[in-house]
Picture 1 (cartoon, each protein chain N blue to C red):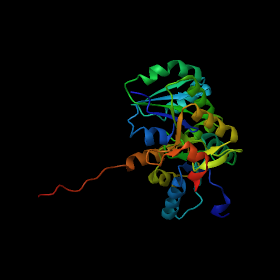
Picture 2: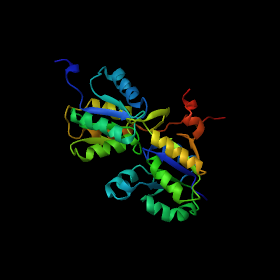
Picture 3: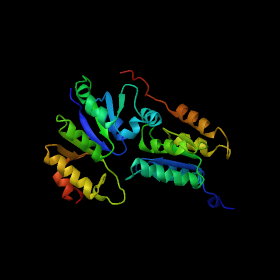
Picture 4: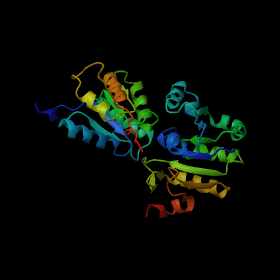
Length: 133
Length: 163
């Protein structure tokens, strides 16, 4: 069975082209294009976004990665989750989060939690060395 | 200080509201006017999750909004009043003489609606409702985020903003 035969159970959703851009970066780094589905809320109200996510859940998605905690994508995901308690919603995502999730063992129960921790740890601020002059 | 913005946005509390407008206007409270949300603790908790800790949010029904509008407008901190649809805002404008300026921030695609802007789609009755509000002295314009161009209602309904 090729990797394309199995539809991914994780979906990335965000504003405009956020999900497509982030997942394209995952593909560039891992060489895998079968890890995440993508979706956008562009042009949709919250109810239409929710309907799209419900369809995805009915199609096997069990983990939803969303961009902004305050965003309509997250609101829609939380509403869809209400009737589907097995679904996990992760917000505030970044490339390190998706990469960690991508490399987790398939079906790992705490993969989303571990990926969030990895994402938090990946954030840092660096400054150049102090100049003598 | 008056309420800085009276906004119609079918996404209610979301990124454009909290970040896009909230930061430049230094908003400290939101008044979300929606009968369904006002009656649901679960919905309120969901929206509260998207609001930063330094911003207060009030969930009120249309009737409560009418009763409490003067108090909201007298708050010394800047705030925003939000409705999820045109009809709710029209009811507020009809009952609150001080509410004379409305921002169309997001009315998205749905069956029966025609596109007026990238983020504004309207049915015939919605257009009529906006025209009636304007005829009663309410200044209505479309603007999704502060950096975007302000589109007056007449230009919006004429379809000139799509060209």
